[in-house]
Length: 289
Image 1 (tube, rainbow, N blue to C red):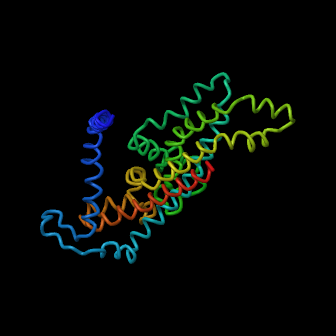
Image 2 (tube, rainbow, N blue to C red):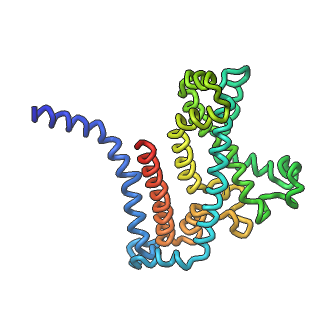
C-alpha cells in the first residue's frame, strides 16, 4: 500500500514536472529577481556594481509625484472602464439570449473585437478619434480637435476604445451564465404574475451572481495592467493625463533605466492586484455561505 502511494506520487510529480520547470523559469524566478532588484540602485550595464539601498526605492514612491499621477490615472481608468464593461456585457447577454433571427450573427459581431490585438484596436480608434476621424466628426461639439489631444477627453477616449475591445469576452461569459438559468423558473414566475424587473431581480441576478463576480474581478485586475492603449494612442499624454502605472513602469525600465525603482513600482502594483484577489476570495466566500 505504501509503495503504491509512493509510486502514484512520483508519477504525479513526473506529469507535473514540465509545468513546474516552466513555472520556475518564467514566473517564480522573475518574481524573486524583481524583488531582489527593488532593493538595489540597479546598474543596468554592470549588475555586480549595483548599490544596495534596502527599502529606499519604496520610500521614494511616497514623494514621487509621477507615481501618484500614474496611480490616480490608473484608478480613474479602472473606475470608468469596469462598470461600463459590466453593464454593456450584461445588457448584450440579456438582449441576445433569445433564439431570434440574426442573434447568432450579432453574437459573433459583438464578440469579434476581442480577437483583435491591442495594436490593431489602438490604430483603428486613433483614426476614429483623429482630427478628421469619424468619431471626432460626430462628437466635435464636445471638444476642439482630437479628443486624444485633450486633457479632459483623452482618458474617456481610451475608455471607449477598451470597452469596445473587451466587452465581447465578458458578454460571452455572461451569455453562457444566462443560458444556464432554468427556463422553468421564468415560466413559474410568469404564472405567479411576476413582471420583467422582478424576474430579473429574483431569478436572473441570483443565478448569474458568480459569473458577474468573475467579470467584475477579472476585468478590474486586467484594467489595472493597462498599457497598450495609452502607449499607442496618446503616448501617455497630453501632459501625463493618460500615463498609467504600467506605462510609468515602462518608462523607468526602458527609458530612464531606473530598474531598481521600476521594480519597486512593479511590486507595488502587484500588491494592489493581490488586494483585488483577496477581495475576490472574500466576496466568493461570503457569496457561498
